[in-house]
Length: 150
Image 1: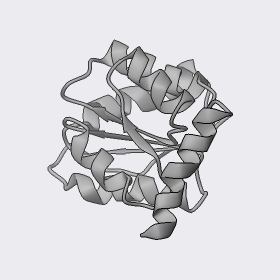
Image 2 (image 1 turned 180 degrees about the horizontal axis):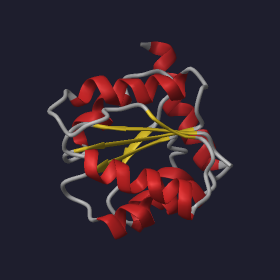
Image 3 (image 1 turned 180 degrees about the vertical axis):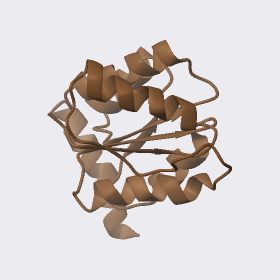
């Protein structure tokens, strides 16, 4: 089982709590660490997206999940952190592609754009999809090589 870190901003706070309960109680993940925030007050999403991204890059967690209002900003920030491949997913197809083809290790969901049932399905698909070898792994390596050139 994966070790998972999760965070949100105020726009994703409610859904974050729904997903934490889902991960722990329905999917039986033992390591699901909430990196904040711990109330629904207004916060800056870049701070929390960075916490999740760094937790992946440093190897403390296998998978990161970030929930902000729409998902775009946190995804953009996370992908600036070496070793992080963050995907904003919004359905089964994008989730499968993110994990199988692009070996995403961080998931971003728009807490104000995705309902609870779909968010749970996205998380489950993300966790249950295996990154593919072969040409997909080769392409992911090309992505990672760009980090070395920066």
